[in-house]
Image (cartoon, rainbow, N blue to C red; front, side):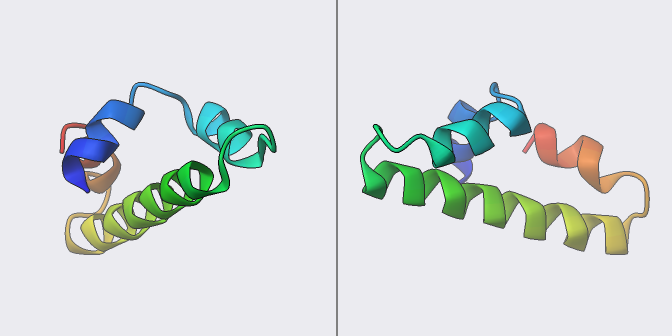
Length: 62
């Protein structure tokens, strides 16, 4: 998952959400991107709980 996310992190959250909503893209790829986003969100929350204010910065360098 981390390697997959590094490839996606170049895109903004809006771009990722637009990709997920794009019906012309294969469903399995859209599902994978949605799962990656969910993992990213959970990781950010966990890091924010452990290190308030630092989690969002650290995740992008993950």
